[in-house]
Length: 174
Length: 222
Image 1: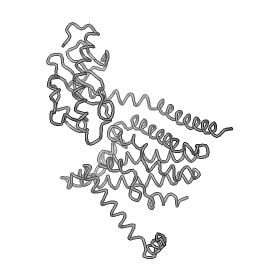
Image 2 (image 1 turned 180 degrees about the vertical axis):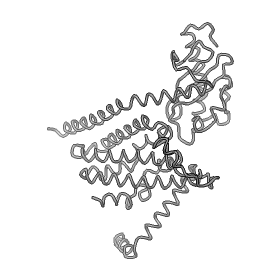
Image 3 (image 1 turned 90 degrees about the vertical axis):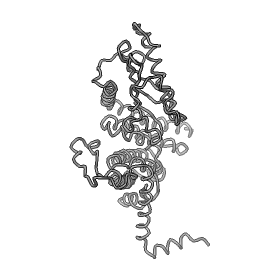
Image 4 (image 1 turned 60 degrees about the horizontal axis):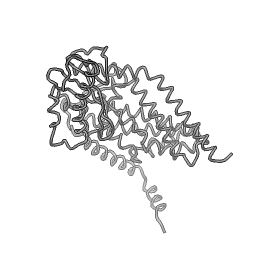
């Protein structure tokens, strides 16, 4: 049998064994992981809302409670080291925004400021008008992470508008 | 076989002697709990990958051995990440990034290439256990010093690893932390540098004059 064929079969066996181990572990851990993530998301929603968040939220294109007084928006923008996922609370009355980063791969230490469990940078901006976000932190705004934060605020507003149109709400914001 | 274990822990200690795995060592050793979490995760990966590579050593194609080693190590790293996210979620949230980069840890790839791919399973296991213990000793030593100096406590947050009952293990050493810098990256570099120097000093002290003479003879070139 030619060497290349033997090597190919060997690689298939090794790859197959690795895949088998991963799929079996995924089956075992899928339920607890999902439960942990849901619990964490629910805690974050409640923290942003300032009260216990409803558990039966209907999400339309990344927006929950599209026609209500407030909306949760979830999305992602490109950061320095990959997508930065976020969750934002937009209020209908003053179009103010509160935002939390839920997942990122930015450089530890340098971009710790976007992690609300480590720094108060984002919590201190809670309920800021969306219009103020483009002027956010002008001096150090040169970093890609800061630019991503600004893009998130703009995207959250756009996503909410789209969802409200899609849900045919009575009033839509600009 | 016990020699493989002892050699891996002391003589070839991956952190103190070979200076391998320094990125996670410095980044995650700010508390004993974090250090222990990473030590357990690294131990699982190094032992699992050494066993697998040793078992598969006769079928791993020589021409593609490094990709195979990386595939196997990445598999064990992913398994560790999934288990941590499922059963130790709070700890996972704190050290997830550094668990994921275990896959690029030179210490583990080094043991696979130098030892596990050439030795039977028994010896590979002993070597992996020694390597894991050596790395754990380095992590926990640094973690204990940094937590004591920077936070004034020892064994804080152990409940993240061992459940609510372990919260009582916390020991308060100082009411005011004597050196807050110890928790920050520069503090990690300084303390690790001093620890490396101390270990080298001890190693040199253990060497007898005869050993030194022998070393000189063997390294001298005509």
